[in-house]
Length: 136
Image (cartoon, rainbow, N blue to C red):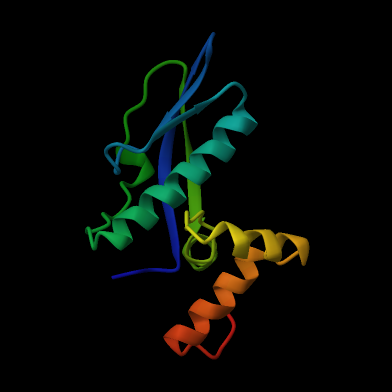
């Protein structure tokens, strides 16, 4: 079941050459950074994208391990990282993607002369073709 807010513990492993981050409850969810701030920012993004992918795959999302059950070593610390999924879902669903298309050169020349915005025209035409009235 999709939730709006997830909070997972992350283990920050601090070393001379940077900080690596892993989520013990989410195998394959790793990131790193040169500073604590960068590692935290990257951990938040990694968590959001990992959870979004799990949701899209209908994979079960585990319950976070309680902090007192996580064993850490020297030079490691635990931070809680949160992911507000309504914002993540909206950003992912509305992100721009690049499409390659082919049109006759003469049509391209005229459109460029008239300074046509190809992306806007394609979006408008696709919405009309698909019967989409509301703006996303």
